[in-house]
Length: 100
Image (cartoon, rainbow, N blue to C red; front, side):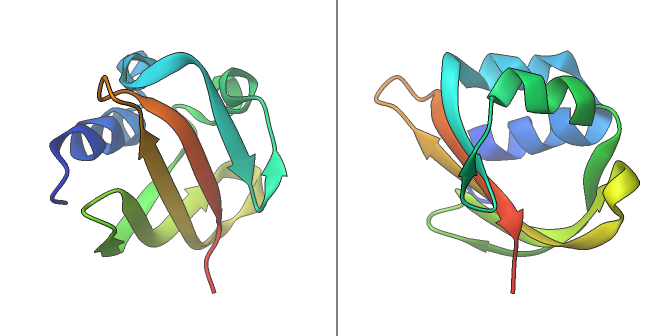
């Protein structure tokens, strides 16, 4: 991964570390398969239970991550995480979903 902040955020996600939230603005926008979802509510369930099993591709200067993901009760499937940074370097939007 070439974007250091994305790399650190993914490491926090992988470890179920609540430090994950520190990489984001107070109320970031988020979509899951194109549908708006509440970021904090979503990750209150996912953090510590869901993670990447592999990272297969990185695009968009290191901000788009593709890989195999273990999504708790939903199973394992290929996904994307697309991080969007504001001018202060915090993520103000995260788009996730199944990749084709």
